[in-house]
Length: 501
Image (cartoon, rainbow, N blue to C red; front, side):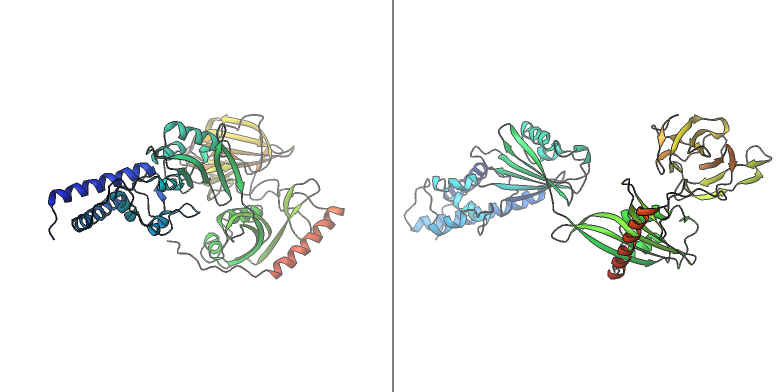
């Protein structure tokens, strides 16, 4: 049976207008998927998907209109302002308790719209919430991602203000996610925001909900449990690679290096064949996801056949440190190397000065490193001098006690907190490697002064840290034995090494 072309075009136009009308009434974006959930990658519009969906829906409307035209040629017409959905199709449109449409596709909704379905019987569909999932991209701000999904500026500002009460916007990072829940409005706007859930990490969720004054934010912390992990490894090419193969995370590896840095020069002394073992804590959610790491409880390194094992212990004053089996602290008055990743380019003693052109006593060690490499305070102390010092260039001198001082020369920059009279802690960044003053290239000139006389930093015998005695020692020995038992009972972690390339 031939269909009148003019009648067909009219029906097609009616279907398109009805489809658009339903979209406006639902208040949902045109790229919403079948479940009323929208995935929006902030800063990355989904125009291709929108065009694809629009094309599919247009074809659906055309097919419906053709079928309807044929039906109307052979059956009595149905008033276009009346719903024609059966009770079964109506039931299929009722959203499930989760807010998602359970078994109907958007194209089926357009079919109902094409039949002129605007019955108040379907008004409950217009009040069902939908959720927009956002992934933070580089360069985004909280305000920009909310505006990107179509919120008006006043609503976005109110949400950001509330969220900022529990989360510092300066800590926004790519990869963080946000779920914005909205209720469609009959007027066809983007919808009213009823809730926002921001996930800054695997540990926290910031929930923003409606309140009398606008919105209120509450931080929800996930329940975590501590798990003891043991990792053993043998160094082949480097400590870093061996630790990765043994399943040691970078944060824990950094702590391991700090524990042994008073006794081991990791730049020069560690060789293939040396070994390490450690026992530390992982913090996991109820689902088994590791979201944080605790302290190293026990650590051991074998370097050149010499075994060193240390245990974490909190003394009577509440200070935590690492001690050997006899209760002697690993801490020394001064670090052996105040800059990481550097090589000694010039030792202590007489040498031919490359600038002055004659032999001269070199009263320190030179560590070659790239400009901008951080320099650490070798020990706790008070800054005696920080500024320009002739041939030394930018210079810092720290008094550690009545006997020991250290100095640092040729810096590119001195940390803004480092001024005469300032207190510093061991391993605190005090400046950065440079080539100021009489220098032929970027390096740190490092000196150790004993009773105001420069001595060889490699040969000086430095005082050790605290030695446990009495009741403190007895308490330490009890903890040491307990840690030894735990270490023996825990199987070493095995992990398939990931490709390092």
